[in-house]
Length: 130
Image (cartoon, rainbow, N blue to C red):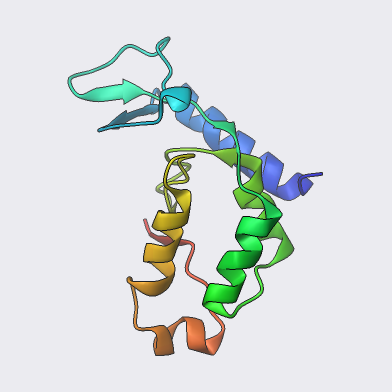
């Protein structure tokens, strides 16, 4: 069962994006995440969240790579829905597409900051300043 705080946050963020007509993204998206009910605008295509395909085994493997235990709410967040974006207000979460979520997170964990400044002191990057 998904943490209620995580579910409410994600659902509200997505509802706000929908109200503001911000459910479009440039570039390629997995077919399952394309929303053809949202009219394309130039090279921006409509997207929709889909049920996450992330498994506990995949998260366990990432924990071994980072040498950090993921907080339960973060695990629930990653296992709830795949999305293109949630918010740009203060925090911009990593894109969480069903096609490349592991690579995006590995980039955030291992390529965005020197390991000794983030992972080695127990911090786990999961987004950027918005």
